[in-house]
Length: 437
Ligand code: ADP
Ligand code: ZN
Image 1 (cartoon, helix red, strand yellow):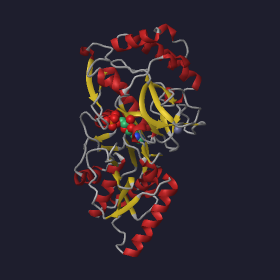
Image 2 (cartoon, protein in one colour; image 1 turned 180 degrees about the vertical axis):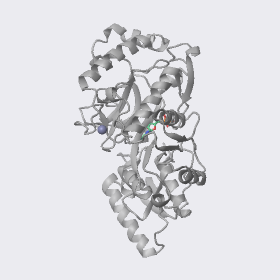
Image 3 (cartoon, helix red, strand yellow; image 1 turned 30 degrees about the horizontal axis):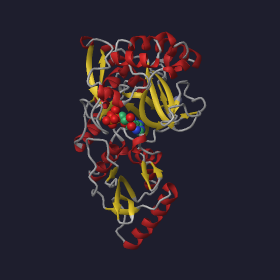
Image 4 (cartoon, protein in one colour; image 1 turned 135 degrees about the vertical axis):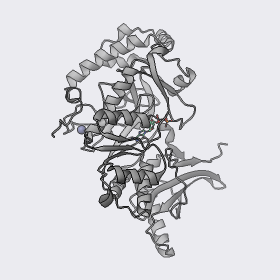
């Protein structure tokens, strides 16, 4: 059977002009709807604006920002724009960086969310004949139910395996003929390691073909390593609970950045200090306004995630703009000896070395000589324990790290399995034990 390359052909391929007209209409409606929340009524009064002031898409910049702290201070239901009886589910963020925040959904919100995820899955080539397995935790973590309903909407046979129990995941992949898998990147690497231990060859013994990886920062090198190891195409999936969860932005088969669904969102990239838009194409903080939500629309939500717009048209025929691979959050940035470093820069170098596995840990400590960075990284199983060879390798990695991050870290090559990486949660890559004073 031959299918359209698009799940929602009209909405995915509409021209920029059509898309922007739709955005303005939805923005105006959303802004009026936001007046149901005391929180936004107050903010509008402070700024001296009313919903009628929003006449063009650029007027989005007149709207107030919303931050994670706003959600926390108005916990749990302070930003609801519909009565609770009209809501059918709530989710909360995984709380990686503090107290959880709550997001409410009506049934329509849930349907729209499932459609967004279905679009993404379809975009990377999943079709009703595929078997989809989800290794994300079900429950409050939005990647569980989020992918579940999206995959059902595509019409795939779904395997809600949920997080952990890697042996069982692998058994399901083999027995049920899983062809599309969702896994966070650190867990995709773990699945591969366990397959190797069990003598399972993913190319020979499984039907895996597509992998959706996201929920945490990962480098292009990490993606390629996962693709080679598992014999799949791996696509970057960006989600954030406050926007709904997975389905916000996703790579298409061109693998040249993540299309963000602009019929759901108005996207800005700002300088996190001046709060002004950055020049087109420059790195900044992603700010998103939801324009398709009932229960809890958010205006100019500051994601703290850093990215940039990619220029040009995508050959896939979708005109929704593309974001560069997410760098990590502004608060993931390490400042050491006055130098700004993102963990992903370190990962990019480490993963160039086939001798290393994908598990690493960056520790920052205060020593007599000042603040130091130690990077522990696991060797891949096959590598030698010859001392001279290890020392040569260590020197070369350190040299390349210094070129990338401008300071010389202490490097420790450790044996496989030393750094316990959780099966269930997003990987912890940085431990900051520095004394502040
Ligand atoms: P928490 O904020 O508690 O981690 P979420 O589950 O909502 O809760 O996580 C969303 C965050 O995860 C994003 O803001 C971003 O920092 C990170 N993230 C999600 N997808 C990606 C991705 N594809 N690449 C990099 N980071 C991602
Ligand atoms: Zn595309």
